[in-house]
Length: 387
Image (cartoon, rainbow, N blue to C red; front, side, top):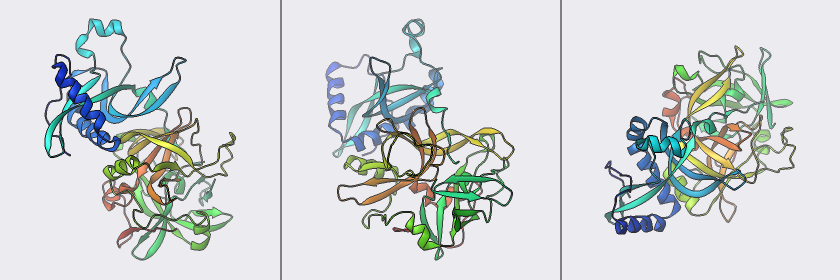
């Protein structure tokens, strides 16, 4: 299925029969195909809406959010185009400025079953303020101690192999808790473990810089010193031999559509987790991968925004991630308890129960590191199915 970069009008004024048929075609699509259509349409129309509607900051795709009668917000499993706005306008304001009213649905030409057909894609309006509470969460599965006195607690996400050498993946803000505002490399040699070191941080990985300096990629490699002890942290967890990792967001859409359960494997021994919750925590992908602004603390004591490509997940059943959960793996589980790696959690919003995840298709792409001025060891970067 493809969508051409063609106009997708507000359905106002469209023939009722055409609109009913377009809505029926949308409902007939699987959730995975709906999300794919919404994602393509959002990309096509982003420039139009940010230019013509003052309140629109950006346009993306995700799931609808609705408040109940008591004002409690719930996430609904309904893929849609999402307008991110500075603030929502009242009906009185919209009456005075009708050109600023956002459409409830958009028509789009989609290639379905061998021919082009019109579908009606629903929309949702979400405020920018909802996106501003996300911050790095390193403060415990492992502790990290640097020679200069800085320390952090976090999680080693998984193992990769580069040129025959095994490394652990973790966020840079865990392995380098003293991030330099100039983004000059990661801490080398920090001791990682529970008592006796099981890994040592390397200078390989991405780069984290303040927003005004460009994009960040919060990933660093740690050389394994005690592979058996590292493996024991995962309790025998293995990835599926058939599909060990999601190779793209389209494949991720399809796996979700097949009914696989999305789970955040946060550490069970986090002292902040006092509500009795036992990981892993089920979650929903609420917004597709896009650039987000996240709050990080730097070595000079400042808290600054960084820009990072991540997925937004909504943790279910009132649970959330805490400081110390950064680095935990996010996996899909099928009915036979086979696991597929989706990515690595790097930030969260405790109040809203949202998790921000670096997708695995970025973690395993060498360009993700090179594009921000980072580096990798020589050799092919491969995922290890059993850490």
